[in-house]
Length: 270
Image 1: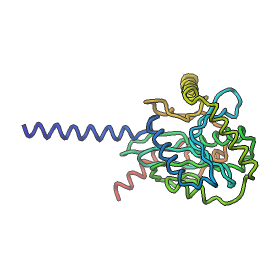
Image 2 (image 1 turned 90 degrees about the vertical axis):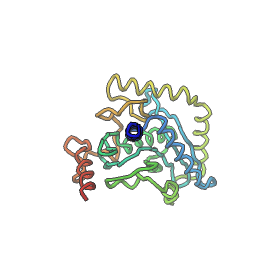
Image 3 (image 1 turned 60 degrees about the vertical axis):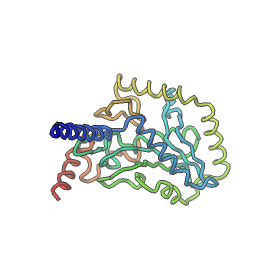
Image 4 (image 1 turned 30 degrees about the vertical axis):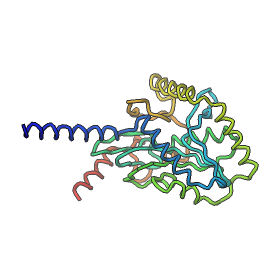
């Protein structure tokens, strides 16, 4: 009886562990939404007299074809407009600025996801078009809520000190009139947006992209799905110039899972 009880307990522990591992691989919509809530809470530390924050915005895509894109967070100040993409990924994160795919590794199991810098570049372009501003007035930021980076990340990819990164920009890029007009337009957008309908439309875009090939960017993960092997196309961006980083990008332009495995093997043998 004691042996049976011990066996059952051990089985339960193993099952629980496996569930935790699988849950950490590629966040589902609920996990992504939780990450956005955590980021929004941290943004409350910004001085409201200097910074105006928006969350969960739905803007027309810059192509002007009637499709939309979703922006996690947007912060406006005289120091520019900060467009923030939040990621809530467990495990180790490997990636380079010009790689099409990054890798998440949990206990040696690797999963690829689209380079969030490329993804957020689309968000910057959409906001720039909507507000009729210049690209130099924007800052693109990717924030991993609890990231563990295992390769050198670009300076606009962070996993801590979200408000400190934003407040560290001190060059004036927007005058008071531009700030007031931008806030007015975004507040009007919020009032006119039916978020339930916008989310449904975005989900349909994603489903249509999955059926018809790489058309729509993966702003949100479909429930229970893993990202496609090839990411959908995005507008040309400063982080996708085709010039590989030494030792980082294999000839096909994708992140080599072997790079992550080699790193993991080195850690385990150390």
